[in-house]
Image (tube, rainbow, N blue to C red):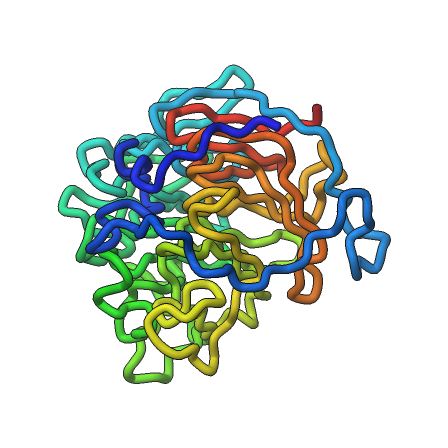
Length: 408
């Protein structure tokens, strides 16, 4: 099995700041992580024995995760961060320094947008997310400006493609620290724009933003950029009638939801939340169930108490693993595979880890993990996944490589 050596917990910062993951970097806590062994991990879903059928799959449609894969390098960038498919069916890839490039059969094209003068790559900053409006008329970029604040900017899209001259600011938010910016953008099955924001940074959520719905930090936001200027708040957002909460919040209790995604078949929302010192977690709910969900941070880190008692409305993760353990130190969320090239993986959620680099798969049914596997391929410092128009998945390495996940 290909797996690069797992760096020590401080290495990601030395590698240009662990780009928005911030799970265990020295500036993420007042003191470095202890050298003593962590407490016994919380109970995790059982893994099926090698060769056994996964439990409770109801048989017919569950993916079989035993498949031989390989990684095919399709492009090289300075530091890719995210991808999105445009109305032309082209996969566009973002570079952290501010450029966006189409990916074609011959590799990367010339940049269609260049924000190099508007953003900074200090700390965990840069161009962090991109998405196209459901009707294809706007292209959204999420980045940190030169002062470190979060910005979502819209560019017009017409029959000629993205117009970098027709642009407008949709959303801004000051960030108190240089880490935990979140920054992922996704258009949901409802056509709304979702933005993931970290707790503002520092170690252990010093602002206590995770449980505070009066701030947009530590939350998943849902807005309608086409409904008004600069955006409208959907009337069915869960906190619109709460005078003490921000209307834009859809779910909260998140530490750093660096990558989240929607399953195009089931409409389920998958959030990979980067942990502090002990647990990396995956949360999954239907879009409707996620409305108003409290994922627990900073009272909880995964299924463990962190800064207080477990809240009564806590939605625990469907899957978690030990920070700094065999898988790695900072989870990188991916997508539910819905492509055609690897039928064994259809319906499985693929994710990786910035430190470990291995590609892992989960099969979840009725809120329970019924199968999981490491798939035998690994990137290096995997910072993101991308999904093309055919549903095939790509690994984006912090060092620049873009790999497609292919059957061997």
